[in-house]
Image 1 (cartoon, rainbow, N blue to C red):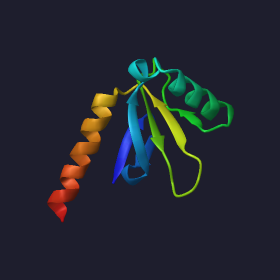
Image 2 (cartoon, helix red, strand yellow):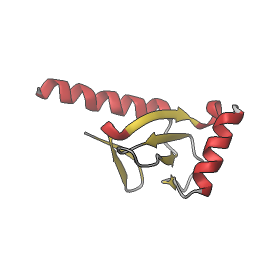
Image 3 (cartoon, rainbow, N blue to C red):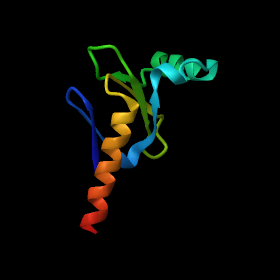
Image 4 (cartoon, one colour):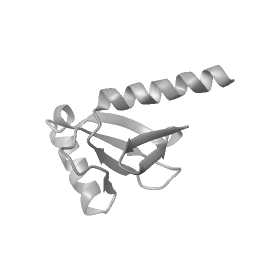
Length: 92
């Protein structure tokens, strides 16, 4: 299944490692360092032209993870992902 992150960006739900609230998680120095390293290495994709609210980490196999920054809240993204999982369970 897929999850819409905003603008024209859609990701596979199987590739999601985590969905994080930007305001709450960037309090941690470790998170700030991770995001900074990801940005410097070109792993960050900003899918928002508005104030960012969350970020989603995705990984495919052994490749380095991609970090998507989006204006959609982490709560909304989690609900969307859960809704998609609910549909997938009905179809089985």
